[in-house]
Image (cartoon, rainbow, N blue to C red; front, side, top):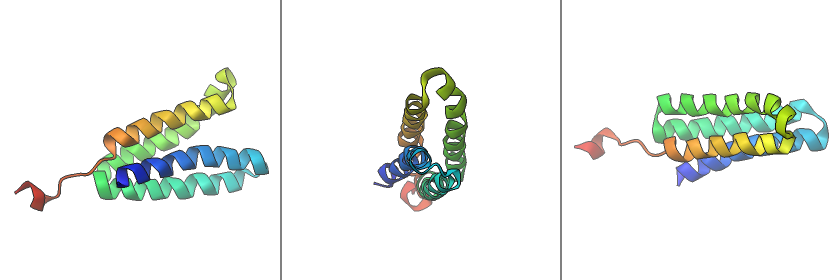
Length: 106
């Protein structure tokens, strides 16, 4: 279930952050949404998939945010945000799964 929750948080952060910034014209408020959801997703990824995958997924999250800006100049703002969000969501679903605990392996 946490795989779904972390993916939902990441999706909310990217889509919600952009929507907040666009609606309010306040970039700091958009950053709060992006940051809070990103931290929440990272903590779930770390718990479920381990630190290494959590760092990789957080990097994809932040990289997607950064990549959406130049991509928006080519395909438009919402298509760019939707594209990077879909990519991060897919990665989260694939990599953000449960790690095996030592007790379960024996």
